[in-house]
Amino acid sequence: MQSFLENIVTLLPGGGLYYLLIGTIALLESIVLVGLLVPGSTLILLVGFLAAHGKGDVTTIAISAFTGALIGDMCSYVLGCRFGTRLLHSNLFRKRLGLIRKAELFFARHGGKSLFLGRFAGPLRGSIPFVAGCSGMRPGAFFNNTLLSCILWGIVYPGLGYLGAASWQKVQQLTGQFSLLLATLVVLFILNSLFWKKLFPRIVKRSQSLWLRLTVAWLSFLHRPGITALSKRFPRLWTFAADRFSLKKGSGLYLTCGFAFSTLFSGLFFWLLNSFELVSRVDQKIYTLLGQLHHPLADRLMLLASSLANLPALLIICGLLLLWLVLNNRDFSAAILLVGMGGGELLVLLGKLLFYRLRPEPFFAQLQSTSASFPSGHAFSSLLFVGLLAYYLFGALRYWQSRLLMIILLSFFALVVGLSRCYLGVHWFSDIVAGYLLAATWLTFLLTTLEVRRRFIGEFPWRSGWQPLQLSARQRYAIMALASGVALYAMSYYLLLQLGLL
Image (cartoon, rainbow, N blue to C red):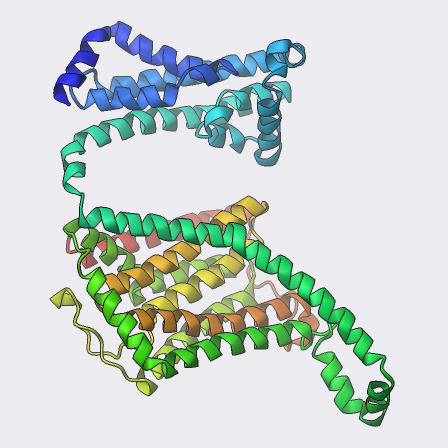
């Protein structure tokens, strides 16, 4: 490997010519269409890799890459401003019209942010500045947005190559058990993503189709002579039953669906309890399997994931979310967060007392616990919190791609927390599943309450439109920025304590 690198280094120029070459590569990759022929990002990564082996100074490399990228973006912008219409009708651009259209849609969707995002979006890297110029974006706004993206790109790409080379020997040592754990996490992430991207939309579509057929069958059933006579004979009972499927009342279909899902999840929870023999065999096999995956770095990673769902960490995160809700005068949502998380902890405590089950022998002595194992409080709290967080943020995100990404990441976090508890040996696998099912039951109840409140605000004894805090957007942002800084410091300090680094 070392001799191969030495052969590459001898072929490259030295001194200022080397840095000029780096800047030229970054410049060419940033020019519309030309960048498709120049693998600039890959080459800049390689340059960072070589810097760790003595070829050039990594700081000067970053400055050269940033300068070239900025000049390239500005060239593409000027081309769009001055010659955009003429170039779009040329034969060269017609062959790549699909790429230009994608860049136009991306720019229309994200505005000035697209210059930052597009810098890290591969083929769109040179097209976005060109489209910005064609659309008549002001030079000052363009420069401000592209400057930040070029600075970050100039630091990140050489830096990744440099860090990758510096840790080359360490990477070779992290094979075996750690590789298996990484593979498990990758597979878990892929399966989770496929569920939300592919399977869940199909389930929703099938459910809508099934609901339509049931509605038609129900209406046909209601018009039968015998049913009509029954409704006239028992009008109050009939009205009560019909109201449970009404979309005009908060106590109608939404409440019925919430009750149905709560019943489903609670039914699965009690089925798990009644399948103790089968579950015990599965638990033991998974416990034995995970015991073979241990590696010092993997242990730290899983301990970190588990610590994020500890009570102090949850209090920090929930406090920040609560402040955001209060500042935005979402008083009912704030109340649900308090009741939901607090009531959830009591629900888990009650479950541990009722279904007392001994924990497995933990793989680390410092994690020994005297509390019951079933259900897992960490699994419960992580799923409950990310479910409420996703609901609160869903309306704040405008685009469905952002919403989908949020759901994928939050659900993956909850899954990793559950995996970490099994990996550390402090819970059986069935404890984790039970925690998720219990959380899903409680979460369904809370989300149903929130949704009914949102759609039928007049049906609840809660003051409508109450806004105790009259703050400007700038004041809210300032308070949230300060609180986020404090929360980040507190969370970092706590996690470092948990990892034994303080």
